[in-house]
Amino acid sequence: MGWTSFRRERNIRRVLRSLSGHRVVVVLKPGNVWVVENARTDFRDYEEALSTCLMRGWIDVLHEAVPHGSLQPNGLPSTESSFQKQETIYRITDSGWSVINRTQMWVMSTFAVALLALVASVLQLWRS
Image (cartoon, rainbow, N blue to C red):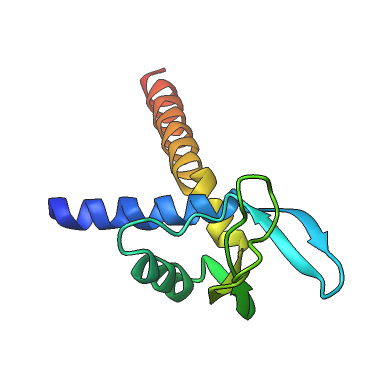
């Protein structure tokens, strides 16, 4: 695995972790418009990373073609053009949360410790 591949995987996991930080702050009425906090999309190769996460089953599409825009510094939508583009809202699957929490590393570590304990027990029984 080369250095560029390592960087690409790191960027994919960074995008996945950024999705875990999305929070709905308020729902505006009328229209049920979600105001999402921490919705960063300024990562390098963002679309490719999202597609990779989708392909690996780490995320699912929650809503497609949702109006997307930015708020003014005072927290209100801009009056001239509230929604400049449309984006997709994703949800993180159980396997995505496992990647974020590095569950596989913990499982492999505990398996290695258990295997070493088993080998030590067998050697101790064999010696006596």
